[in-house]
Image (cartoon, rainbow, N blue to C red; front, top):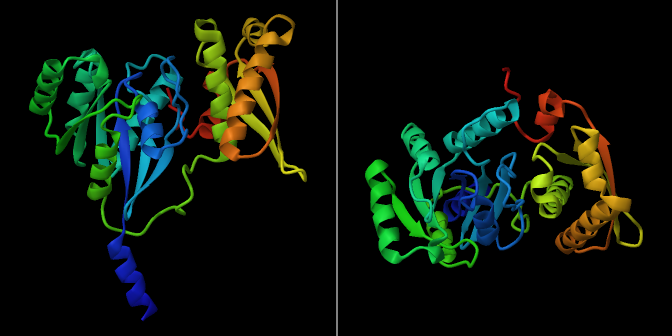
Length: 308
């Protein structure tokens, strides 16, 4: 009898992985956050901020949607670039559904063209999502939707603004309908399977970009070294910011330590909002030569180390 109940309950629920594929800066991370209703992935105007497959988890009616926010697909030049592009494509091949995001302003540019061509080899159902529709006239949107559907066989097309939330609810409901039947993979109150340590590191990395803009290359990384829950219900976090040269270390510290203090204050505030506890954040900056060629760093970021 218990087995029969278990079978019935699994038939009532749906659960599946949905990969978000697109070029850098089309708004994948913003869309994940809009679908989940909470901050899960790092959002930055600097390209290539999502390094690994960070999953956001959405509950909609009787369905659990596990969003795989892949790194933006672009022409890889360095080893780290190749690892991220490889990870993005593995996310597409492993998912139950694939959402292809296009920037409605850019249309099918060179990067989107390459993605649409390669996606023809991905056998899962593909959904077209035109993002940033608030910035484009309706006639252009309809023409772009038609052009994309002529290139690839999409099961559905959605027009959204991930930033304003326009159209996001319709997309969420459609994903809930389309994921396969099955039991939930994660507890219902769990928003993301990215551990809090990793999320905290991503938040600090986002603040570095926000404060330093073009001054620091995106190869910089942040690691959460310690996470201690204290008796007074607060959390003590130590993080190290790794850069490749001493000149970059000085940029992160700023004059009299002003820059790193500002980064730390912004990060601490946001981490505290997410964990719902007071946070004591301590940041350190270290130079680690050639970390971009260290296999261990790739494993920590959830990326496969490219051999060449």
